[in-house]
Length: 268
Image 1: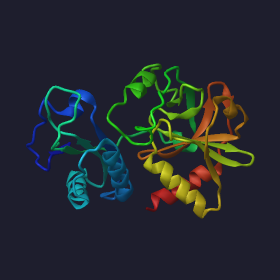
Image 2: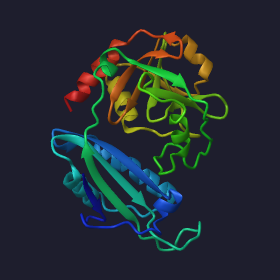
Image 3: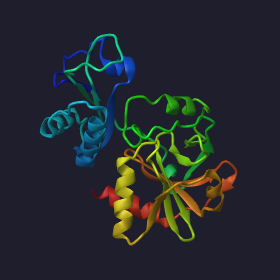
Image 4: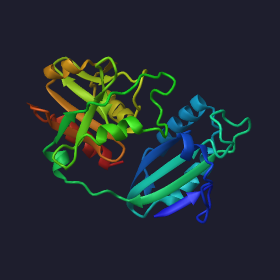
């Protein structure tokens, strides 16, 4: 694994770093294919959105792209970009003149069962709910404790992912994925203006769908509505799109558009 701390391979993280102590920061996870980080511009746009929301000065985009390229682990792998507010006094109050810390690391590609794409995956419902907070909704901040607690609810590989709801019973997405539901009158994806992460692959799937003339509504999606769905699919930056074979005891047909999107993705 190659790790760059503020651009230096021999860099170290200060124990007083606010990202380490308070989750005061952001991160991005980029897929590397053919030696190139996929959708790097979209990832940096989301990082910029999050930095503006949190009031963290954003490093130069050219600098970040250079460090992403330096950290790329060969032909195929994963690059993770972490941006924190930097070190400061032992206090929740942010420093007046923050000195952000950036950590860019590369790691091998995670191998997964190919059947996830061809035969679909099994989901379950999570008991852990996502708290509503519009100021943090959509961005990928470092505090993922709700997802950690949700993922701790099951062990083993038979269930690939768990679906999370907000406090009002609306589906938001998986612990690490965005959700699309397929209905008779079109597709729907949960609104993420109160909580959840607006994934880069979610954006890619929506843009691909628009090019195919496929309408996708972004709206509140009460959990009980999934009982009337014809199918479900999940997206994130590393898996592309997974068709869902089953949610709890409900079995779904696999939609051929999922394979079509993944084929399109492989050509990028």
